[in-house]
Image 1 (cartoon, helix red, strand yellow):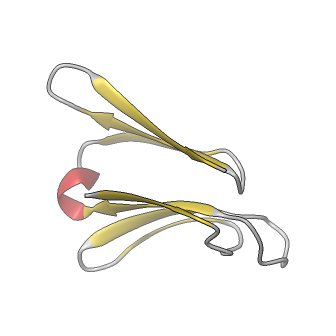
Image 2 (cartoon, helix red, strand yellow):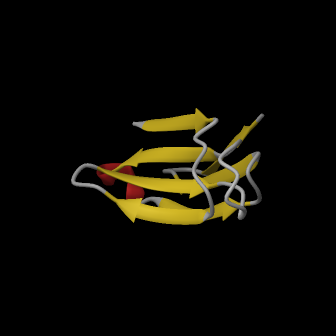
Length: 77
């Protein structure tokens, strides 16, 4: 399972693990808590992650390895 989340209001660029998921978050570098996007990725899928591009607080891309081709998922608002 992959969930794309908008308006996280988290600051900075972070990647952290929980017991069941990995979270890739991109927010503003300032202390202003506005905007922000994140991917919440199940641990079983995390091994297939090729790259995560955290562009800014509005755009983030996750690239995954699949059987026959790679998949790119983009979140923006």
